[in-house]
Length: 140
Image 1: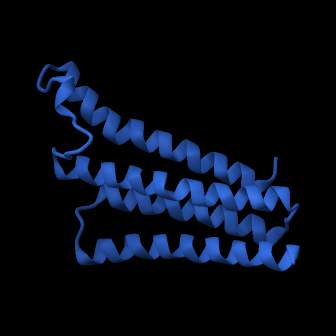
Image 2: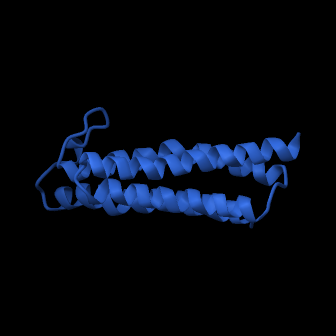
């Protein structure tokens, strides 16, 4: 497998691990101790501790960006576009995503924390656009 494909797999694995380690632990600890019935976790109404709500958003952020990264990696793979820069950008995307998620779930969201979180998101966006540019340049 290519490095971008591995990074996409890592992104998917991170999305699942983040869900299990944050949202899953929070919900199941409440359900299994009998403090909350399973039906109380409604999809249309996010309730709970601030950390739980941040975890829900961090997981949703992963879900929202996974298909974008997936489309870019598919284009790289199908177009046989590769190289050190492509590999580095793909790794940067995964590293920035993991770091953004950790900042999101680990800290109360102040202006500073939110700015740091946004900086890691911006790194991903720049890397996405850069990879798209490389694909277009290589295949034109």
